[in-house]
Length: 87
Image (cartoon, rainbow, N blue to C red; front, top):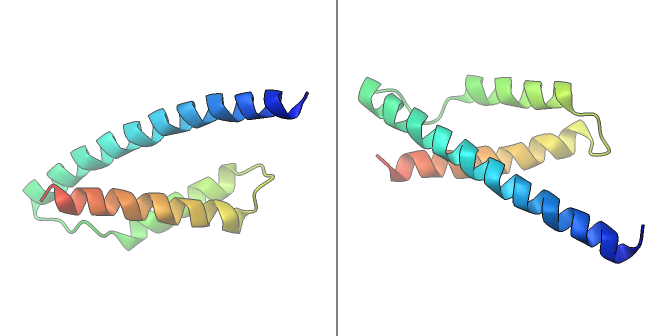
């Protein structure tokens, strides 16, 4: 494949990733509303560690487990901020 082919592939993948992140955000917002109604905190470190363990388990590379967790730390941080904004 040529560079342009790889870039087109990345463009398609980026579109899929954006859709999935927005789906995740919608789910996080729904959870945030349930947390608010139940008087639960937005920040749940145990749940975050569970997510990190799960993404490490399914990671097949080429990214290292540490790199995957770094990405998910940022995703979760954004989702947590989204939940706080809705309260």
